Image (cartoon, rainbow, N blue to C red; front, side, top):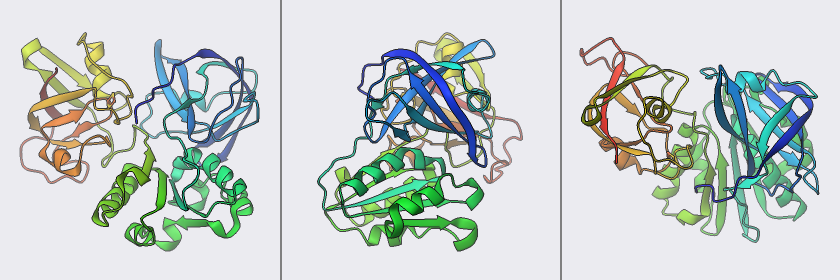
Length: 337
Ligand code: FES
């Protein structure tokens, strides 16, 4: 699912910005080179924080016919390296470097039934799909899950628009979502589109494979910042190149290696394409695989990792068992292609 679109950079002017849920800001942009955004599109945004230019991807939540207005929503990431905090400071009149809408999560029209599953801020990738399916009078169920209502952007608007097709699930009110139950209600012709935290998507993937449903009928969009454990600082070493680099909480291993002068391959930077793969030679700690590229078996083997998103966590922290090795940061010894 790597992006295959050509990036056309342009200026986007902020025309509205407001908080719509806890830590979620809705931002309306007017691009200088409008292009209609199809459902599942995203834009890339360049932001400069602390003198460093970063690129971030945001799903297009809404657009108009000619694409002269693009709506995104930004979640303020707790361990942000500054990008989402910067986006939360934007005010009308500010300008940003943005791409035209890019597509790597297309909606296939014509399936006999759809299930759309959005977890938290993942609703931004799903909302426009749901609107299109509603307009097409398609057979669809839109499941929207969040930990509480305060963290659930747009739920009342969505309820009004989708009525009985929308299933709202609030963890603090109803407990954990019954993922196997959702997948059990899917038939072989149903397509399921999902975007949300890695735990949710992993649970769906496992239930999907257990039922031996068609793999192409399961489609997803990832966020490269969602993991099994809280991010923490760790060390990466490449003995062959004499490199040792610290990977701070708010940066990826890929970025830390690039900063250290290592020539790295990458494309999606979202854990989807596998191009940034590194071989793990030794590990003091545990890997927090955040990709969707490897199978669960490959992830468990801990022999390779997608360094654009995956991290390491120390034993004795982050709910991992303390094996008595160390209380310091995790250390990953790797080699690169
Ligand atoms: S760059 Fe695509 S998985 Fe890392």
